[in-house]
Length: 463
Ligand code: HEC
Image 1 (cartoon, helix red, strand yellow):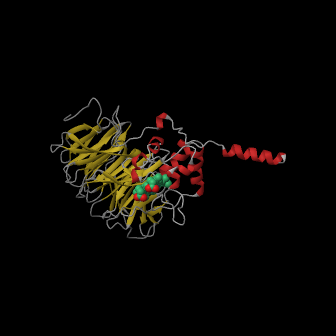
Image 2 (tube, helix red, strand yellow; image 1 turned 30 degrees about the vertical axis):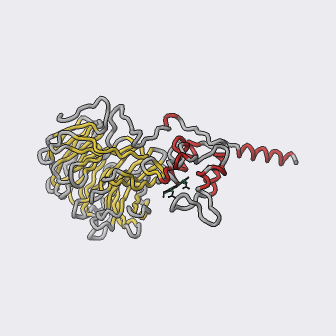
Image 3 (cartoon, protein in one colour; image 1 turned 30 degrees about the horizontal axis):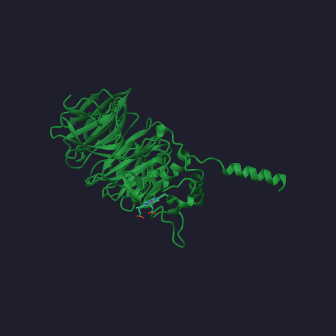
């Protein structure tokens, strides 16, 4: 062999011997391609592929999935390869993995299937290992079931379902819906209340859309997208679609029966944060940091219109929240300027540059930034939650009046506010990890409780 060839061979050998990182290469691949169906809350074939520990635990009856150094004896790999003229078994119903990804898994097994996960990243939660709270979680989202007193509250790695007592003074923990996503950004019950949409992810690692069967407390579907946390989930009125923001400029929607992505548009100029459907479900809107309220058509996935004026200076700061008035195609928006505003969804005259034709009404501004706004179920009132310099405020407005009906200051920032299904109460929460239950007619605080179980229990019952 010539010297040159020897050098090339040595170089190739060292290149091949590049250690594969489980934490940085293998697990992200399994998370993106497999974990939607192989996670603690939804373990296809009893296989859980969310960590080295769960992978090592094996499949059905503990049958090993990976045999260190022996790719041909590793069931994980076998499942990804064609069997004669039959396609690979996994990913089930999905496209086969590209050869480069299979080669990566094989090489990692050849190298000894080593786990290099840092201890801090290794924690995995499941119904058997629920998250423990040393302090209360920041609550980013809340939603009341359409009927009854069940309130979904975002926690760490989970959604807590609280049964609010009839007097609104306290609450009992009814269920913990523990999933893969560390952060929950958005929660919404389906219009018929049978399912719960959960949108979130783990920062810098993945985004996730979860659909839970509320009665069974079971994860029905998990869609994992690489990258970052997702935001701003909404149901179409018939429950057939859910929309969400892709953790970037994109807005997407999922068919809730097939699990297929049916809508994608990346027309925003900055992070998209919230979505809402039109009355008939044929259109979708989004708001985000680019200050725009954008209208899209579901069927064509096309951008249709900027509903708000796009004249520079017409809107100050980004928009955070949008909700559609029940029974109407009117949108309520809130954001950095603290002023709730309403807009007609559809233009009835041609746009002229700089017009704000669709604007319906502006309301008295809150002191800080609006993080959440929601109509009452009958569409006659709305609630807004805000924060300024770490102090919170919850306000209720009648749609007809510019001034609020009531305002309730809260010690900590408010990130979420929602109406009970019958409109009789408002629940609000945020930075301090407490849920505030408020009488919607008077604005009186009826109760306050800790959003998550913490030892020793803090502040239960009437304040
Ligand atoms: C759409 C859901 C889905 C996806 C995605 C998926 N699986 Fe599966 N997987 C299942 C189900 C369900 C089973 C149980 C056996 C069956 O129904 O075929 C299973 C079984 C398995 C088994 C057990 C052995 C066997 O052959 O039955 C392995 C190993 C496995 N999957 C690996 C993977 C890997 C690796 C990925 C990602 C590349 C993946 N799966 C993606 C649903 C899925």
